[in-house]
Image 1 (spheres, rainbow over the protein chains, first blue to last red):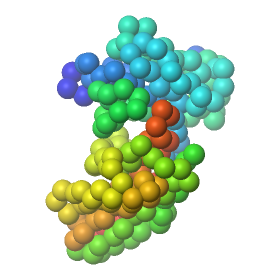
Image 2 (cartoon, chains in turn green, red):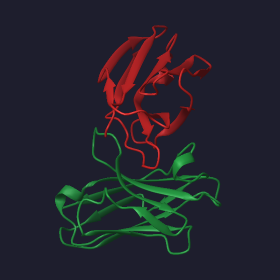
Image 3 (cartoon, chains in turn brown, orange):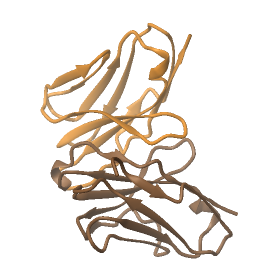
Length: 116
Length: 109
């Protein structure tokens, strides 16, 4: 596709359920980022991939959060045993360049997760 | 290492000017500016790479100081379409983007 695609756009989960959020970056983009954005806040860094390698996962808030990008293109962010504090918009962004020369980040529309 | 942005919010009338500042305690590799409208994804505005650099397009421009620790975004003759939240994204060499808290800009008719 022409842009970064995320699915689902909206997800409602009961507390304790597992969820999986998908990101399809722009074809050929090396770098892929996941961010968490709470209402009224700036995007908070979660994790970074360079191709299939997860080079930085320092922003993942707990071991309930897991991300992968097995073939260096599509990425999945998985949240296990969801909690109410996980409610947020999860943004995926991709970039053509490598970590130290990332250039413009292209963001997807985000996946809004609501945990009841 | 989240950058400091100021002001937190600003309200303008159409045609007025605004300046949004972003500062870091460490020298940056580059600095990005993004605008996010309510319910939408952040959109890239520009990137500055060199100390002392100034660049812009239309009526939105930005500067990066010589020490590469401070950047300012200039919005001149603001339009209604400029409303949104502006984020700076400092790029620390070898590390990843940590966006600033954002500056909420409201342009009124």
